[in-house]
Image 1 (cartoon, rainbow, N blue to C red):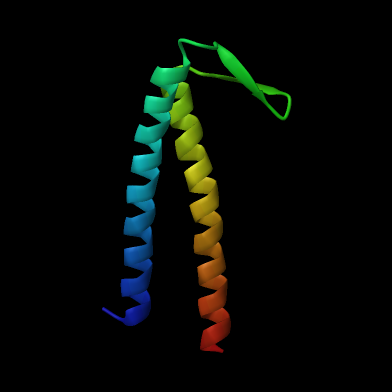
Image 2 (cartoon, rainbow, N blue to C red):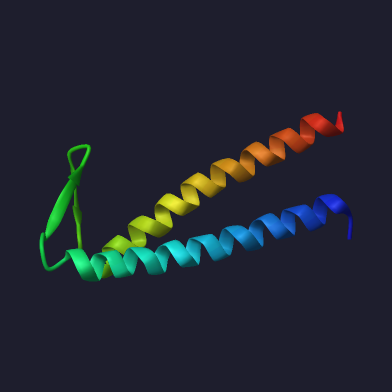
Length: 82
């Protein structure tokens, strides 16, 4: 296994763990906040505070942020190889 492959595998594993943790955290936030408000607005878009909805929001946010970082790392490794 090359260093590049090992680094990608490690980055994907860390990303998967982060997505799972943020999904669980979102679920717990949803359990706690759903008793106080049925929804909230995020830039004009209503988002339900149900536990599964908040877990999905946390997972989606983590995937977008970590996906952007993964793409940046891929671009940087491609530039470094040249």
